[in-house]
Amino acid sequence: MAGAGMSADVDSGAGVGAALRWSVERDLRLALRSRSELGVQLMFYVIVVTLFPLASTPERMLLATMGPGVLWVAALLASLLSLPRLFASDFADGTLEQIALSPFPMPALVFGKILAHWLTTGLPIVLLAPLLGIQYGLDGTALWIVTLSLLIGTPILSLLGAIGAALTLGVRGGGSLLALLILPLYVPILIFGAGSADAVRAGLSASANLSLLGAGLLIALVGAPLATAASVRIALD
Amino acid sequence: MLEVLELAARRGDAVLFRRLGFRVEAGKMLVVTGPNGTGKTTLLRILAGLTLATAGRVLFRGEAVAPGSPKLRAECVFVGHLPALKDEFTAEENLSSLVELSGVRPTASQLRAVLSEVALDAQRALPARVLSQGQRRRIGLARLSLLRRPLWLLDEPATALDTTGLALLGQLIARQLAAGGAVVASTHQTLDLPPEHLEWLVLA
Image 1 (tube, rainbow over the protein chains, first blue to last red):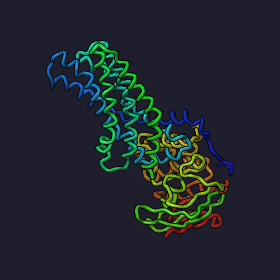
Image 2 (cartoon, rainbow over the protein chains, first blue to last red):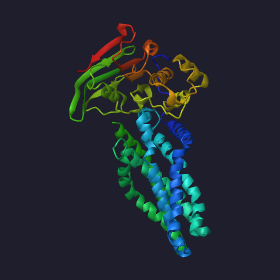
Image 3 (cartoon, each protein chain N blue to C red):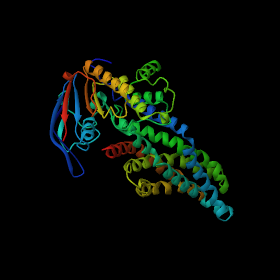
Image 4 (cartoon, rainbow over the protein chains, first blue to last red):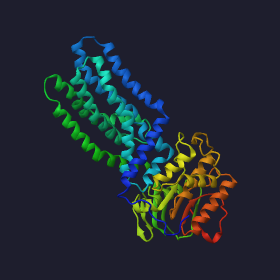
């Protein structure tokens, strides 16, 4: 034990990097130990995308038209499926209390959790997209654009979703409330994301859609961790 | 070290307490007692900055502190009802993760020493899932021992502890007080501490 002069171990400026490292490393390690939970979410994505061509006509043109949209809708639903778990277990076992009391800046800790969430749920979806897109007869450019739009778009889904997940903490039936809260915010991302591949097919450039997605990502990167941290504090009160 | 003025809190419509005031000096322990539902946990959560008080002020080292202020967060440690343990992690991983969250990086030998201090040598590498309630509490004690914070806020720290666990808790608190720290704890158990270090607050 130290003496009465015991004081802060962290000065707030240097804390951001350490806070990020702590929460990303911890959540990735937790995710690795409960792999089956991650598998469910990814299986859902693969199954939805695979069932669609089987249920509709095998006509090439039609499939290529709806392919990007299906990939995007499935990614969005898979993200929605995984969101309730983002804070639920940390809330239930008291870790969120300790996160709120940590000398590290709380938005950085929360951002680390969101980043780990995206790495374990969003990134696999992006990586699988080119493979699954082949079922829809998408050509090389379309596949590349869909994958790129998912790469920019899925982090926005995680960031916005985290605000909803924090707001619905401790609420009974939080899962359905979360969907109601978050879906309207997801709609523009869906439109620009799926629209980017459409633009390419129509012979236009996808850059307008992708730039809008990129702008959305920047706004979400700045705003979402702050809003999520504030929401978590409210949930703990 | 800690001073509370005119504090009031309510839960829903019920007023838990109002015009509550007390001081906790360095080297003293404030024992908060009272029947269930009188606001012991709420008081501790207000002091930690987790819950907003309805009215009143909290002064830390003579300065008014806002709930959740970085200054307070860096100087106090709160042990609540919830142990903040992950079932998937081992006892040692849980401890080191919790301590790192408070900004302290323990070495492997420090972790080992403190876990043997709380008699968890044999359980060091076991997942928290298989630990008993008392053993989970002991990880919390190990954390207190590793973190050097002047103010401890303990909510029912004696719950689920056996007699040796209680003795250990008493030793840790005695060491904290001797080092010039302060403790605020809600408890029903009598701890083996010199009465001149204790002050009592009875909520009713």
